[in-house]
Amino acid sequence: MLKLYYYPSNASFAPHVLLEETGKDYELVLVDRNQGAHKSAEYLKLNPSGRIPALIDGDLVLFETAAVCLHIADKYPECGLAPAVGTTERSVFHKWLFYIATTIQPEILLYYYGDRHATSEDGTAAVKAAAEARLGEMYVIVDEAMGDGPYLMGEQYSLLDPYLYMVCRW
Image (cartoon, rainbow, N blue to C red; front, side, top):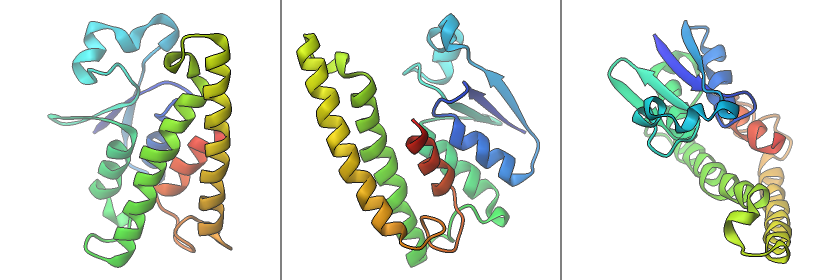
């Protein structure tokens, strides 16, 4: 049984939705950020970056939201959460998964944690403003790609949809 280490409204949201979508049994383990549990020695053994989520599947320990989501989709291919490997659709799917994970998601971190990238309040405000402008451009790209949808992959629901919902919600 899969075990998902999560915190509400965190990057564990998309994997949690996907686990629900599979209808399979899984276990949730709360990592209480308010108590610093994500920086505990026990949790850092699972995810050395101290970020949430982490997923355990037998002896396999995964972290990074996109990797966790992809593992869930590939473990349960009958659920149709990702196109078949080797298809053109799978390549398009990868394009959007990596766009969300490596372009949009880091920009959101800049927006919310600008102080990590500046040395003054004015600098923090500038980082946040620039990130906000870039995010607007990124979401236009996604919006145009969705067209009439209803999903990012057109008529086919996939793991991209809860992942995109998660980052839009932030």
